[in-house]
Length: 292
Ligand code: NAD
Image (cartoon, rainbow, N blue to C red; front, side, top):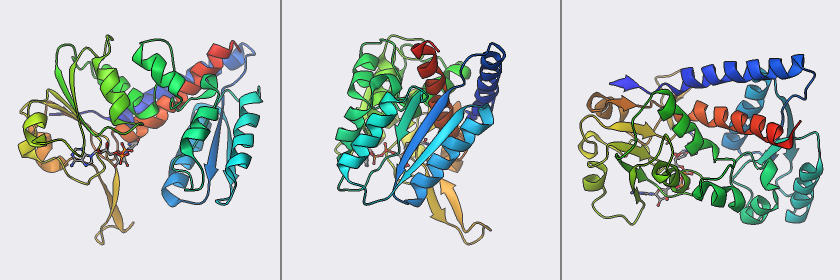
């Protein structure tokens, strides 16, 4: 069994991005600038946004964090999005989800200019992804593709099972795995909460991508010998034996599944760091596409 080490791979990508920034600087070109909008004070969202901003600093990108009150109106948030669309200094921006219930997430996503949509959630980017046209890929699935690519995982002709069909992970992931691309050309089965006999389906997977959001759901009986397993789930679970008081678990029961796998991504240190690395890659691309 070999680990799909997202932490080390993301570190390598950060070094590559740093070099790209240095080269741009030495040529007197603009430095990529990412803006992140956060509404409210949800702890998990704040942690995610902070690590995105911190990564910008690490690679030498500019970043702007825009913190808005939970009770901001939908109109006010749309106005902020429009300001960012029009701001030439900002190459790409994200609006951290989830948003408070009184704000329609779809409306906000639709308002983001596709050329600045570095999260890759706008329908135009999703449509272009379907058609294999240049676009911003959603960060988590793009990070998984990058990870599989850097570990030279053969995907062509393989059976890929995706567990979960969310708009940000499972659905785009399934598209990327069937597309005609270097990492792709799989026969894909996408499964969800209504799927029957999931264990039989998952056991037939050469590549199993797990994103259902239930801690340690996938056990060894659900995985074929020699499979490649990518664990997207991330859960903070209380653990009194640790100084922090918690531990992080994935959607896969790592200790019992790992020995059966050819490759497996750990939690933490697997998909998480790759997601942020992809956001940085998208931001650099957003700037390049603008022709700066
Ligand atoms: P979600 O809750 O939006 O979607 C979960 C999906 O799983 C749904 O489509 C549902 O139909 C499916 N599902 C639920 N129960 C199932 C079952 N018993 N069998 C088969 N399918 C089932 O979740 P999400 O946003 O896609 O996130 C999934 C997990 O990935 C979460 O733990 C989340 O925290 C994590 N995540 C991690 C990253 C990262 O960067 N590491 C990014 C996004 C999400």
